[in-house]
Image 1 (cartoon, one colour):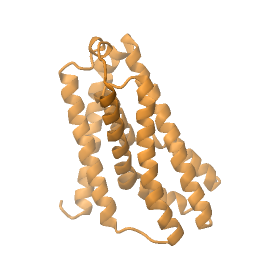
Image 2 (cartoon, helix red, strand yellow; image 1 turned 90 degrees about the vertical axis):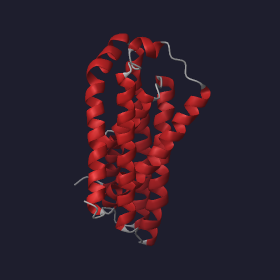
Image 3 (cartoon, one colour; image 1 turned 180 degrees about the horizontal axis):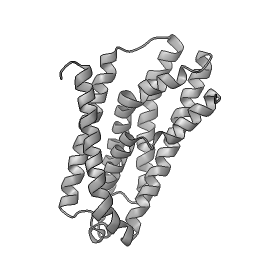
Length: 216
């Protein structure tokens, strides 16, 4: 069995690759037409928002042995699903209009105000994801620690490495917008598939949340 701290580190490093996180951040990276230099900051904004939720909700649970009611997480999951579905439909609209064609992206100039709005949206998305999907999973991970202090350290390690992994993933993904051929592949092949997957994840989150609330 792996050391709990090693497990927390590995989970943090792979956390950005969870499908729902990829859907959210990649959608905002593309729909906001963010270049690589700003994509890292976008990933950082998401990661900080995600970490804030994990720490603010996780540390009291660990140190005080308390918990939140199940409906709290279910409502957060519903919110995540609605936002992901919205981003997927928004991305489809922009793709259908040809806004992601290489020529259009190369001629795009984004203002400082647009960047600030994108970062705020990413931070809010991170907050929502940390509450809805990541936090309950993190509780299962920290249960493997032998003491509240070690569990708190493990949670902090998990959140910091999640921020790092999100910055790396968003930066690597955004490099595709710098290459003409890669953007053609993205526009004609990857984006249509990604849009379908994103909408599917949004609908799945919504369906699970509604079933948990007894509305389906």
